[in-house]
Image 1 (cartoon, rainbow, N blue to C red):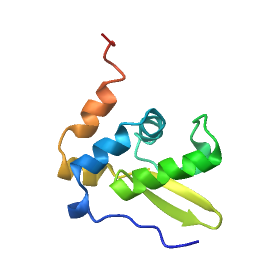
Image 2: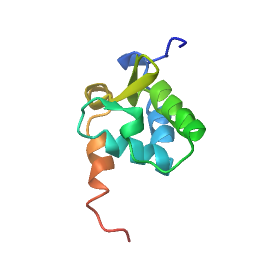
Image 3: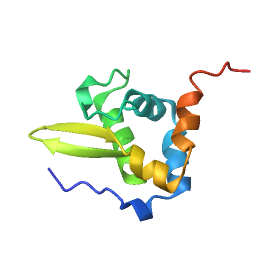
Image 4: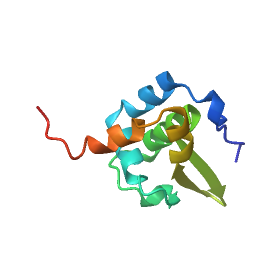
Length: 104
């Protein structure tokens, strides 16, 4: 497996994070990782073809939203909550609070 690019905390840009969070499937993935626990990629219940999910994971990883750790042929995903909270305080709180807010 090729080396996976994860930007350093200082390299995470708001425009990239917002782009990554702007797609419904990627937002569902991030919400599934909200607990902060490392999760195998196959354990996330998102209805999309594997090739499509691979693209979404790449966008999330390269934007700095998630970290992927390879283990054999599997990838484990973790939300980079600490890095995102350091760079953009309150952003994830807003994203997760949207679930609790009624849509107008």
